[in-house]
Length: 318
Length: 315
Image (cartoon, rainbow over all chains, first blue to last red; front, side, top):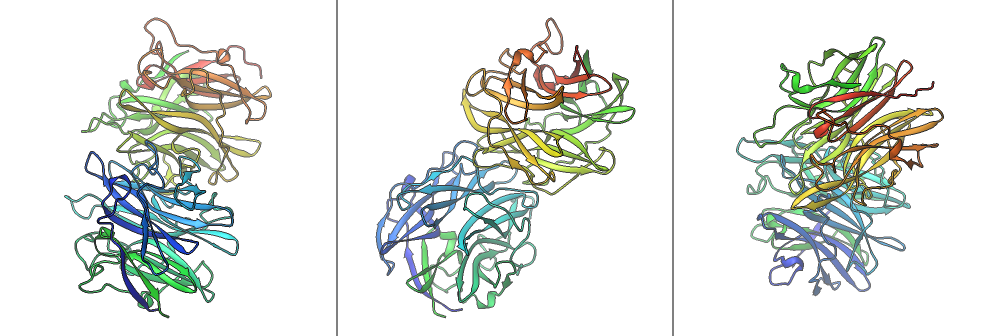
């Protein structure tokens, strides 16, 4: 594969964002509407304790990725007290079915011995994503016997009439040093559904994609697209310690392919996209989102600092 | 019949300083093993963890304690897991040669004090030690049951496994403090591992819409299912008359229940008794021509559990 970078297309700076947010536009998620694209992203505010809360905003683009408008209001509120999504939604993955618009919530809530936990919930929109309503206060996909915590990063597609959700689950929390808080390790899994609401973890506890950096590799935000009968998965991966400031240990985009949605072959050598020296994505590439528009395949993604300064897009050349 | 066991009187176990909550029995030829949850002293942050242990009672004199478990039957979970800070309560059932346990695993949260999900573990040594199925829970949260999945009671009726449990529906802030609101629920399973939730509140409220209902236990007797449970007000319930009482409901089919607390047949004691303020966590079992109830007294079992027997048993 080879991707042609079009460049950074959205910087949250200078826009009036929901919930008073001014930085971060993370994990772009595309909804194709009539003649334009609505892209949902996670932006951040700080609460009274100085900790971040992630909220969902959106920006509309024309098909040449010129900004048409930026949403000022949140499309979905954070979860209620004690719920799985009380402290953040990251990402909101949207899927249009024949008669519904589903929003899959990557919900985050804070813990005491470790920083966070996560589960995946579902909300529905009847106004092209300007507002979403949850089907319940609890999640549709959460921790289970062999996926003990940190269930998140939903990405849902329908293939042959069946819903597939790719997501991540935590495998371990590790104290890499005595004076640092515990770091998490997570891997990519897949669940299936006939209606997009009730999910079965057909491969419960099975890591779909092989590690490249060893068992301490963290893999996040899978996105899948089908081309020429082959399923292509993009995701981001990194070391699980010292990944924030050491550019050589931070996120890069990885790649795997499958003929049957069951067996995945990791093939990062063919991912066709890497960091660009001197650019907005010189140190990090993360949170990829693949989509097709008018016969072309595109990849939206975040660059340095996990998307503090926005996201960009690339087009698949071959 | 009186108090069976007071954990405050055990001296040699740091993990069992006080509390003996949620008694659950496993019957052997000569003794009855009663599992319960107990706590060491509070940690440096002033918080408790909880473990499950057991006492063996003489089958022919249930007020006679034969022995107390040396160790907890389950270890606490690893960093970040659902049962890192507690395994409480525990309910057991025999399956072939194994004993299978379902337990509430506790974690600590930032905005609310805790969250709970139900784990599963198996024993190959008659219930002395258990191995967890995995690091995660077997029954967790869902759209209609967002939090606090706790209080499991495992039963087998008509070749089907039934889990009665409690599901949190919300946290209610009372005087700046979040209080959990929970209702009695059930799930069914063929293999004990994969559960189908019924997704309805089984027992109507009587105190208030936010009535908290806990610790359901069900016994089949004389052609009917009988549920004993505890219930309390949602606010100002600690050490007051708004605390736990034991309620009762009956059913012909396990799914549709008629509540009639007046038939619970047990009330708080008067005078200076250990159960003069609240009673909770009823566990009902049939043994050698009698039906017994183990239950907790004041401060939800801080000072142990007691035993009651049905007056008018008819086989």
